[in-house]
Length: 167
Image 1 (cartoon, rainbow, N blue to C red):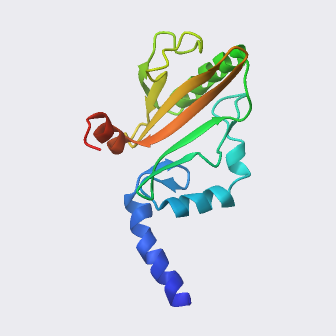
Image 2 (cartoon, helix red, strand yellow):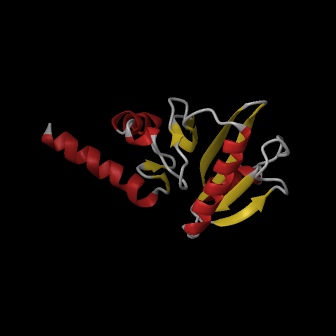
């Protein structure tokens, strides 16, 4: 049994070393079952994530996006439903947070901070980490008095391949 554990570790090291981190322990292209285990083991800490003062985001069961059994992206969203003014504040605080940790804003709609005016067929705002390994996209969704802010983490290279129609 000990030998099996060592073999499992040896075969998982290339994924950890060569794979690109999407968020914390979640590695792009890791087996989705492994990602689900991480989500289950860390469910308490992953249900209260701050990306800016006064924001609270959470992983959900549907946060992990896979293709052919491999993790390709992560979706998280505001922990609770937000009013229009709260959604606006979340967008501003979260952008400020990502820019404060040297993520570069590479795209933003003209009205990115106003959920009512954001064009729904386009991303609201997009960031790239300093090492160009992760693309982070932020979008408000909702109407009337109920909104949520969604954040999606993509592998940078996968995202470019997908955008170019190669994936």
